[in-house]
Image: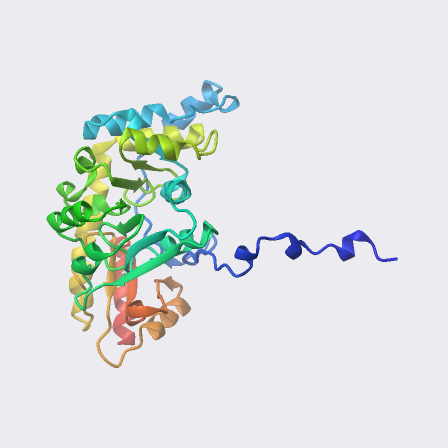
Length: 364
């Protein structure tokens, strides 16, 4: 007689929407002890604030790990609110900015709703739309030939949510602030400005101060990139008090641990160190761009910590990606749409960038 163990098929109980679902595909993550030069997932090449170690020691010495963390990550809320003259209740701290995005979609996207986005932009947006499993629609508006947003078409599009990375990913392009504000005023639903890379451009580019004047605007941020804390998972989303109160209803009870909160707080307050390392990334971005252009690459001006590089005619982007991988150098290649004509390269240290350049020089 067959046992229940052999007869039970979990697939029979899985929601039918999930059975056809394609999850988000992250960049390759080699083992932590490998000698791979990792320039594929837009991590910071420099370590985070050295003040973190002392802050962690204090958490352990005070025995705080046995206690639950602050439900709202209140101190971090207040630090951010103070910098932008906001009410702390306008800020929801999350387990990475990806949790903020998921909560946003869960709150507002229902059956038959439409999510609008330029194409390409952050590839998690269409995945989130499908993850809602409610029959929501994702409307991708192709960028123009110069890789900038098609603002006229975006303004004419109907949807409950419009989302874009600002500056955009994977192109690295920063759109003019006035054009973005005009789009926000024109769009009849919510607008998300995903500012994961905003710290690598001028501070005036951020739409955070505009939240006071545009009730449909939300801004998300992360500590993964400019604060060199990708392994920590801390982010936040900002909007009106009312909008954030709706989103907060869906968050996990203690979604950000005490260690995560303390490290994020310490890093956020160490502004001198933050600016020093950020400026190093910006300087290396300029140098690497010049070097790659000397090899025939076409590269739009980047306001991020990566470059979106189109090889000269006759050179396959996929071939470059695979050839570099054989040399233990990881970059990113997207095999779809306009992206398949490009490779995306994260800005590394000077030494890493020089090795990359010499390796590409031998291939092109």
